[in-house]
Length: 234
Ligand code: ATP
Figure 1: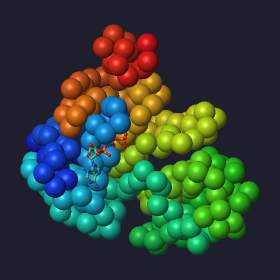
Figure 2: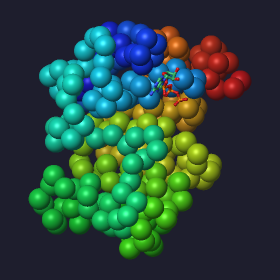
Figure 3: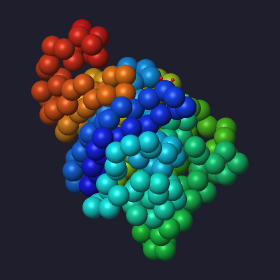
């Protein structure tokens, strides 16, 4: 589904991503974990065309997407929930969710998906006509995820969905991540919360100072003493 090879990204003279290789196969939930400043968000931005790359290639469904802008990627089924969420503050919750479906024209299907998301996140349903800008951080995260899922992506990129959320909200968000993955959606998840991410994922990658330092089956990584010491706080 997604194959990244030798990816390099720089900010001015500083290399933030230094030759990353990463693979996401159809149906997988792959997580990219690592410390602050490791280059995870930069990698996500490179995939979605927000940040130009200085080397390597990114192949999505058999085609290079180097330099392809975000709106074109969305048309091809690659959706991203960015860090900071990017919801439309002056629109209501319902309007935000409907925006997620702007490339679809099956109104019955859209309505069903909106209801499904309201099922996942009853809090959004209670507030459907409220302006999105007035939502709490956790509620905005739920809305951003709902909107992305409603676009019916083939590949969903999630950038630190747990950031700034209370433990209960984090649990809720991960419940939905696990559920959509079980339903067959392919997901690439960037997370600081390594434990939750590895528990949900099929495979994982560890990033440190711009390079991938470890990768493998998520279950094995959870048991790996090095991962436990460095990233699980044990
Ligand atoms: P975090 O978990 O803290 O978000 P991250 O792994 O996502 O970290 P990035 O945000 O990708 O890390 O940052 C990687 C490196 O690139 C850091 O050293 C950061 O300071 C640098 N960087 C990020 N954005 C910019 C920018 N716009 N200009 C200059 N340097 C940047």
